[in-house]
Amino acid sequence: MNPAQQILQRVFGYAAFRPPQDEIIQTVIDGGDALVLMPTGGGKSLCYQVPALVRAGCGVVVSPLIALMHDQVDALQQLGVRAAFLNSTLGPEESRAIEDALQAGELDLLYVAPERLVQTRTLALLEQVSIALFAIDEAHCVSQWGHDFRADYLQLGILHERFAGIPRIALTATADQRTRQEIRERLALNEARQFVVSFDRPNIRYRITLKHNARQQLLRFLREERAGDAGIIYCMSRRKAEETAAWLSELGFTALPYHAGLDARVRADHQSRFLREESVIMVATVAFGMGIDKPDVRFVAHLDMPKTVEAYYQETGRAGRDGEPADAWMAYGLQDVIKLRQMMASSQGDEMHRRAEQHRLNAMLGLCEITSCRRQALLAYFGETLPAPCGNCDNCLEPVDTWDGTEAARMALSAAYRTGQRFGVNHLIDLLRGATTDKINQFDHQRLPTYGVGKHLDAQQWRSVFRQLVARGYLNVDLSGYGALQLAPSCRPLLRGELQIELRRETPRKAAKQRTKTPLSSDVDVALWEALRERRRELAEAQGVPPYVIFHDRTVQEMCTRLPRDLQQFAHLTGVGERKLEKYGPTFLQVINAHVGSAG
Ligand code: ADP
Ligand code: ZN
Image (cartoon, rainbow, N blue to C red; front, side, top):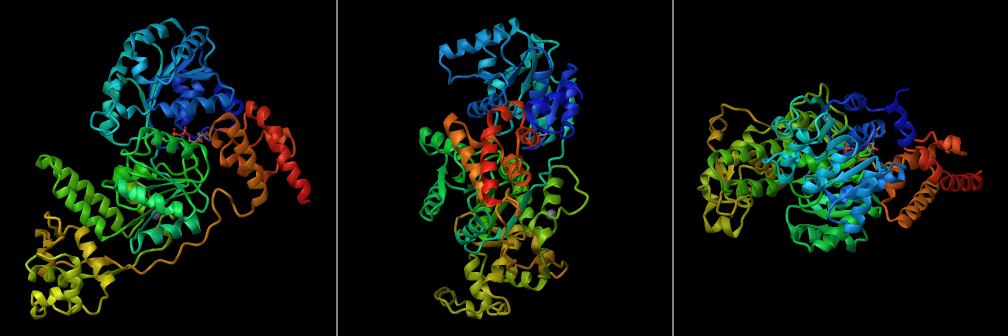
């Protein structure tokens, strides 16, 4: 066994590296630079933590998020690693103590905020001590085009000059080529070996369902599939986030709002409850999530459609970092499409910018409407090929029917055209279905040739036709805000009968099978599971750390299935290294033994 493997087992309690962790780690141990592109939950932290422990000196980790630093240091200390952080939350005395420890060679890992690192004082201090490596986490923060840009990151190129010969490893979960290039250039990582890991997140089940009554659909999802689980619900507006959180709270869920309009203290409090308590649901706008390192988020739900596939993938990627089954659930409908199309159309900026936005929105709509495997489409969007359908998305699990919608599409387009392209979808549906309404009477629309030609479809089906026509760009939405539908130039071949169009059939899908809530597999003794979690909760509370810092769900689950009876057996569980064995083994064994004794 090589030194890296020994550390992995002894300190972290894991049996083996996930390739290419081993290669990355060896590169850095040998003194080489590395650029690591790995999805969220892929296991980036070990890539610098292990080499920092193997090499002489202290590993310096640059991380932009103070809350995250705190949790990482807590987790490392639990493992018996000598870790600390330096950032603006520390008073002068505390900073001093940490600097002393660093100088005395008593630290294995030091997390530093970027603005702190580039201070002359800090750099001078680091020059006096032995450094194992520099890790630059969330390296995409150097990208001025990304939404996580941090000016301080631009100065990190300095490390290359001032600490020549010390290996540097930059890590990010941002996939695109341009960001990659920027990281290389700005951090002076031209020589770095690049490691790109598949961005697939196989444990996440993707589902995009059609909105009928979004709240009821969400409620069903939460109650039937995710009862008692922690998750995030994304909403487009602050108000909706608040209202949804209030509504869920009334129903007995622990649901907390989070958005940029809330007081900073309230935000911090909600975030910390989300991390520290179990079963908390965060109802949030896009303001929430960056750097949330909670491994056991079991679902991410979207009540509104994100604007881009990038945003969708990043947000859903916060589910299931621990590798256990997790859900990405979204409800979307015609109104989402109309709203976003309007937003795009009225957005400021030059023509090129608008076209790029349009292009991104179309890709997102395409993902919603697609009838084949969603994961294949997602990965293809990021330039990766998944050879076979995934078997873990809604379209794979319950294949979608299509129907020849050519005739219906022509009726719909013609209804918009004949009414002067001044009406919204509801009126057009009334017209097609031959309804008698005030508006129909007012505009004398009974006399149009399209009046009543569409009685063979019900209103719901017509909405589906219109949605798909808007999503595919055959119909445009008027800018004025009333949502009038107008013909796009691309609809001509369809109107002339030169083009056939296949539409999704929206038969309500069978309700998903009721699942025992993950990560509890069905053969697990629920009473024992709860008792172990209770013990974990007590230990976490006593130390003021999140429960997963004591043990991940995976480890607790293994306690239930493998029923270790002594410390030697306990040591074999995933996530149990030397320190945790010593610190927590006896108390958890007590729970197990009491339970097994009483059960048998
Ligand atoms: P990232 O930073 O890439 O999002 P993390 O470093 O937080 O991912 O790792 C995600 C999860 O996977 C953590 O719970 C971590 O302990 C676990 N993990 C990482 N590498 C391994 C491994 N080789 N064996 C078992 N678990 C691992
Ligand atoms: Zn699939």
